[in-house]
Length: 366
Image (tube, rainbow, N blue to C red; front, side, top):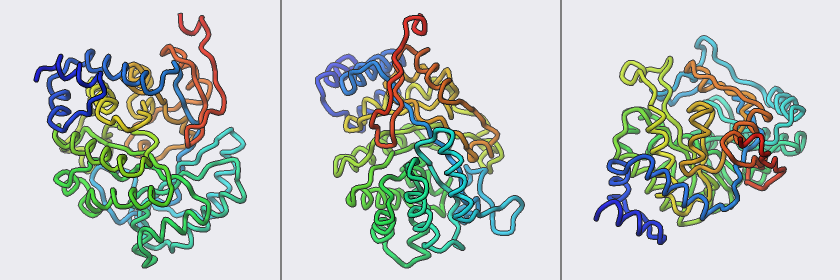
């Protein structure tokens, strides 16, 4: 089958197979792929509107025993610069963020076995009670697996306890590439692809919503990217627990992997990934463009390649900063960037409920 026939089938709503996905990634012209992805985006979300969330991404500890070779953030106990903050400290951080208009706290840390499970439960309970203005979007799959190990509880029991404390969503971090051939090389202590899937599946069964993520641009091959998309598409078929797909490229600065992969992935590759994900992930409601990880201009362009969300404002961020990669914005600039790309901007919640729409003015579109 040629590309034109495949494009025609996709337009009728046919699901793309693994082999067809690989064919699109390797053979389709970028602009044609992007045009098709944009068509699908507007079929799924017809409004000429791009959402964003006012959020922050602090960390409660950088102590970690997983030792991923793509990470510049983690420290070992007693190492230079290591820290673990108290629950009181984090609550104060959240309160200060709330005064700046933050509505979502995306909280992650290292996998620190010295922290008891009660620390995490208290953190959720107190956030819900003491800082009701912010939504606790807490803990990657790796941290949840760590909680299970220190507590002796099953993954489901850990998630249920966090749910009872008031948590309702989890971020998609920890996936990297869901192909064990790659995981063994870049994060061999972190567990398998099945471990990530298991946490997400158990979370979705309980009622949690989450994002799905992908970090590419390191040791993966095209086939691994397709494997990743296939795994999360199959999981989405089960419970429809994913709210959005969020891909970003590996940042090598200060990481052990920097010696092997010294360069960033290109913006062209990013547009390929965004467009392909919109086409392949037919059961995902949203695809997120990342001004933060790819640059503001690339983020704007991605909005014409199938993406319909602009992520968050990220008032605080430390993981990419540890890799010497820093982009910053604020709510006003985020709105301007969306308007500059030709869309109305809509501030949203973690669950994509619209809070406020900033209509595109004619002068902004000109």
